[in-house]
Amino acid sequence: MPEPHAEPSAPASGDDVVHVIDDDEAVRRSLALLLFSAGYVVETYASAESFLAALPETMGGCAVIDVRMPGMDGLQLQEQLTARGVHLPVVVVTGHADIALAVRAMKSGARDFVEKPYTNERMIDAVIAALASGRLDLTRARRASEALARVNRLSTREYEVLRELVAGRPNKLVAHALNISPRTVEIHRANMMDKLGVRSLSEAVRTFIAAGYDY
Image (cartoon, rainbow, N blue to C red; front, side, top):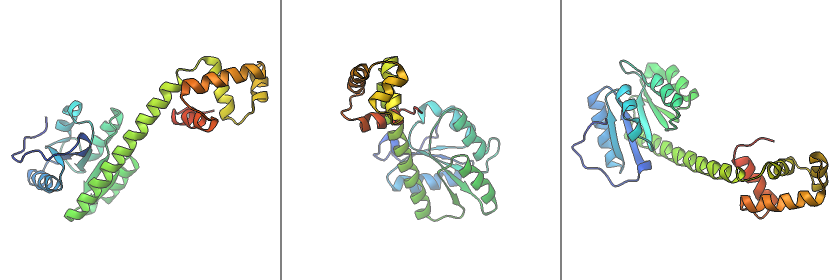
């Protein structure tokens, strides 16, 4: 569970929660006060293990993780989040000698790294960017889920027609490829567009691509 705080929670949405994971109590308190003063809800954790134990309650927001901690370090924590399918924007905090580790963290998906000693402005900027990227990822994931649900409404034949159209083939070539008449292609195309909730072929193509399908 996250550590309790004496200060009251600042008004913010669930997407504005910043999770601070650092074994140094003084650092945790300092970061919590800084981020709280900037208007964020802050939860702190003394170890990677305690953060992982609280995962069901920590979805949303971003995480500020110290790269060097006893037990599970910041890189291992990041790997665990990836393995568990937790898409939480991560800001890694590193010492001067840990740049190589920071680069590894970035290659593994960290949003940013902040080198000690850092200014308050540098940390706030990193958190703002991480939260913004998290919101964008969430929006994209929701759009992809909605698009996939719409494509999954199609019958097998309607999906085949859509796939052929996405490949750039006109109705006559679609008919030839699927061994059906052009009129039947038109009927399936109309039904397909109705189920997708689109009014143009370009919208249908965008929906197909957003759903993650590949032609």
